[in-house]
Image 1 (spheres, helix red, strand yellow):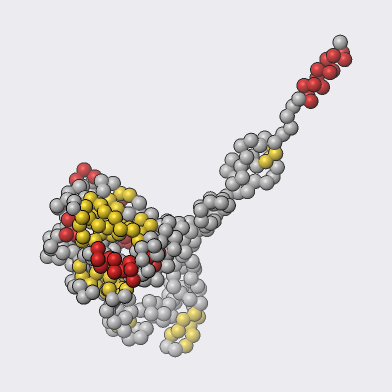
Image 2: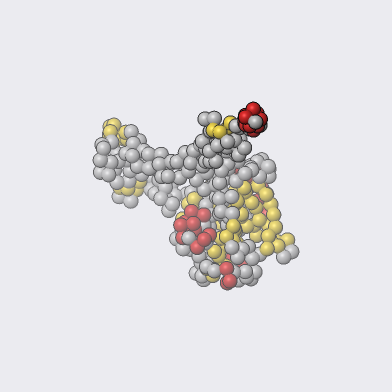
Length: 335
């Protein structure tokens, strides 16, 4: 009897399956759900974006402002995003920055401890500040009826705005209807604009989103000597930049401060500095992913637009309802 019991125990023990070794930490990149014994091989996720080998992109780190994948760094004064170098010139001599940078730093013209402006002129080279606040001759800047200033860029033989429109009045002074709730949106004959998420800071960076009635209104919204671009004018731009397959990359702002990662192919070599403002149509969609830009060309009940994307270099031409709201870039009349 004792021999029989001992044999039964041995049989039971002998039937136990061996432990499966592997990574048992559920948050690790190589977590093995079948493992019941940790073997010490767990690979933690990398960077602030919790990246694992094989995922799109790469591991990202926080910049000095706390943005994941951001590009801001501390300058010589420890100011995040500042422009103070290790030394700057004052009266022709080297001026080393002191620890108390609040009182001794490089001004807008690179003068150590300077005030940036002297007697109405920028004291870097004696050039006046233009309406965009840039030290130069003022020729690269235009202003809308609200007083918003925009930089411009010459691409080929076309002079484009290098920023999205954010005006809130027609050129004669009439207000453009500002819609702040979904219920009041949707007119195809009354000019309306929206701000993404109703956040004024978005308007400052990305401009306003306008329905097509604003684009087509003969009262006009573009600054003096500028107008809404036609499909033909967009096509001239796209062709000059190498065609639909690559032009988008040459038009997009570089980096991933505004564009979502990976911002494929972005070089901004054209200087167009396209931003991903998304669109509005009863709800906000796709900020960071896509930039949508109106043309003034129609196709029946729909209107032509141009789209740039975060994940390719294309410049895509599509059709949309007049009730959509998109970004506006104006072009000079003398093109």
